[in-house]
Structure formats: structure tokens, C-alpha cells
Length: 113
Length: 112
Image (cartoon, rainbow over all chains, first blue to last red; front, side):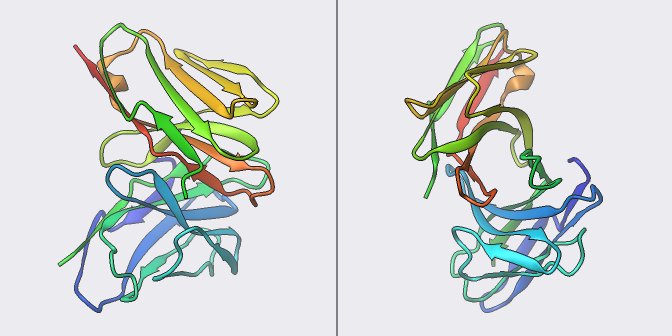
């Protein structure tokens, strides 16, 4: 999927637990994004980062946190404050501000035990 | 909130037929993109059309954009079983800080 690796493919979370989803890209892209996809709904933006050490909240950031310490990595932590975390999570990247096309990873399915 | 809404939500056609999906959006845009998603996979970019363009082609794909009606359509000609997937429109809103906002998708099934 275009040089973006998401892991794990499946993840299970217990009540009160924080879990971290990994997203790594080797495309040398500046911007990275996290989306959440629920069945029958489109993608909703959680967080995005346009440069290293900077990120912005998307439309549904509550209960999530991110970091962007390296250009190639943009991990997403689903905290215990996110009461309905079961969803398919997609990471994407974009070359720079002048290139609008997104490249997606293959996704992580998160479920609550 | 969803910027784009696709119509229909689901579409079933026979191989060889054309498939048309529509997307409506709410606010002024810089460009509109179409993506494809196979079940349980990531999205793949298909085509981008800018706000000053009215029609664009790529292989069997034809996209139109009507900014006065805030709508776009994706036509897949001579469909194949391998075209079975969900199709999403996505918009970059003017002044929206380079965020891409996705619609709810059209699920296309192409039967042999």
C-alpha cells in the first residue's frame, strides 16, 4: 500500500487500557494523517501532522493522542478516555502541501474485549 | 461532520455495464478526489479534479465537477468484477488547511 506500514493488523483493547497503533512511511512524505472508519460511514479525521514535531486536531480528536518525533513515524494512541474505540483505523501520508493525493496504509482493526 | 455525501449508497450492476456514482458537498472546495477501497484494505487514489476543471478522464474513469451545484460524478465504463469495491469522494475545502474530508461512500458490486 504505497510504502506505508501499519501495525498491528488486528488489535484488542481491554477496558481502561491505552493502546498504540503504529504507522511508518518510507516515502519521505511531509504530512501524515490518522482516520477512523466505522461501518457504513466515511472516514473521519482524528489528527494530522504537516511537519515533524507539529500536529493538529482533526474532527474527532477526543480520546486520542499522537506524536511526530520523526518524519517517517506517526503513532496513534487510543486512550482509555475513548469510550467507543472499536473501528478500522487508517493512516495516510502526503508528499507536501502542493501534492493533494493521499497514500494509505492497509489499516488496523481495533476491537474492545 | 461529513463534507461529502455519495449517492447511491450501494450499486449492483452486471459486468460490462457502466457505473455512475454521485457526490455532493457543502462548502467551497479547492479540489475533489475519488478513492477506491477494497474490503478491509486501505484506500487507493483514483483521480483528482480541480475546482476550475469540469471533466477529467483516466482510463475507464470519467469524473465531472459542477461547482455551481456542488456536485461531482464518477463514471466507470465497461465495468469488471475486479471493480467491486467502495468508492469515496473527498474534498479539500478552501481555507481548510490542507485537510481532506471524505464522504460516506458508494459500495459497488459488479456481478459476472
